Length: 248
Image 1 (spheres, one colour):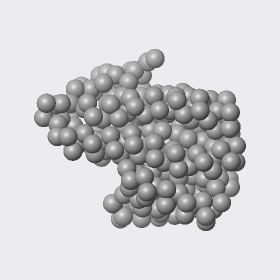
Image 2 (cartoon, rainbow, N blue to C red):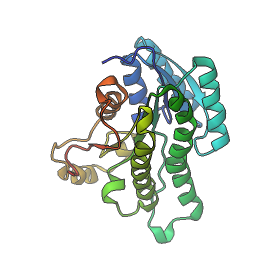
Image 3 (cartoon, rainbow, N blue to C red):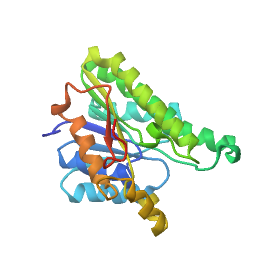
């Protein structure tokens, strides 16, 4: 598989799954535009790793929840590179709490970045993809958006919304040669899971048939496949990367 000559935009690409996606797409030959919102040092570290591995890319800071910022950034990328072939809508946050204790501003933050951010970026890039009659849009969902989780109502709602949005856009854009798919990770070994107490980790692992947390690379290689030529007849799908935690 090669993505040589293609331009990929990865939102929330400074660390975790986003960083793994950046490195994987770069390894397969794409030039990767690494979006981030506030953590400049982490974004620079991601770019350094990408370049050290022989890949090519650049940084592009903007807040995906702000449509004007998204439109301006996408315009700059297209002005410079003439196109965007691949977008990975990975930027996401969580604000966990029981619904009765969840502040309205926390709900708005999670839905604004996770769901509205995905909508803004898709809308901004699909115009050029429609003209080119080609594109790969990959949205980051979650197993939580499929099965729910106590204390994560905002996060679950945002990820379930992404799944519905993915399927709607797949139908909307299919005739223009654009595929739209979602990847739904399960328990992935990131900074978030590192903070879990050992006994809680053990409980989580008991529910995963493969008996381990996933890695960012597990998710990134699935994203790379969906971004590549071998996935041309796959659209509107949710690809589960969860070790068997949820089987549908």
